[in-house]
Image 1 (cartoon, rainbow, N blue to C red):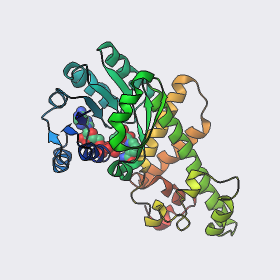
Image 2 (cartoon, rainbow, N blue to C red):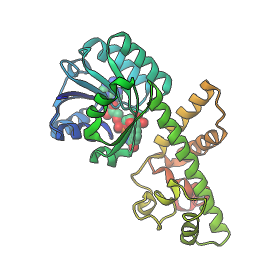
Image 3 (spheres, rainbow, N blue to C red):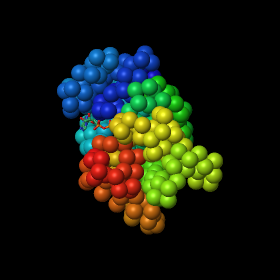
Length: 299
Ligand code: NAD
């Protein structure tokens, strides 16, 4: 694996492409944004004038685009017609399961190996090369996919066949959205009952309320020093991103006939927080809305 085309050099893709360069690979990059291209050039990527130009003569194509329609369009119009069929195709965007499966079928028909490989970890992990990848692919292709992903990854897990990577991603983030709201409601209630936040954290983190949203990413400032709650909820995982993933989960639930009422409630609460101005803030800032502090502090 020496030559890689990287399409989509935004908040995530920029750092991921840079890590491919650091691993000694020749990276040809394309994005619609001139500023993103300039950053990629500074990181050592060669800049192409289009997707079609970027994918010529490469061993792998990695896409990191906003949503399903972007991925479908770029694959149908530029990657599948212009990449060599020997190239491994990896889409790491978070998109709907249906789009991932459609692109996988189109890629297979055109003679390519394809993987949906969305990530968990955010921009800091993208920069550090420590993302977790959830992969949907043919079993026989997993080894070569793992190798292509290695410079960007802390852990790479095969979820199943095509679409399973996206399914794992949206199910995981639905758990995260619901559990964060649960933890925030508990802190808000504890406060009303006169129980100190720090004390509640100590007790719940050693009791059955323990979960990642509480002990690794505590929304209450103080107990977990690395959590965004200690820096006014800046950075981290934006509310707009959580809302996008919860919407994908609800669409998937509606299509498949799964009941996900708490996922629906979480989507509604994050949509409200987003509209109240929380869009760019870390998703744990929903504590301010749930504890009634939003108006007092402003968002
Ligand atoms: P972003 O908006 O910063 O980057 C997307 C990039 O794609 C932009 O630079 C845009 O110009 C480019 N683009 C759009 N259409 C294009 C096209 N036709 N050709 C070439 N480039 C095109 O978004 P991001 O934060 O980097 O997220 C990318 C994906 O990763 C999304 O699907 C997101 O849900 C997922 N994700 C993001 C995070 C996060 O914390 N930001 C975490 C995990 C997963």
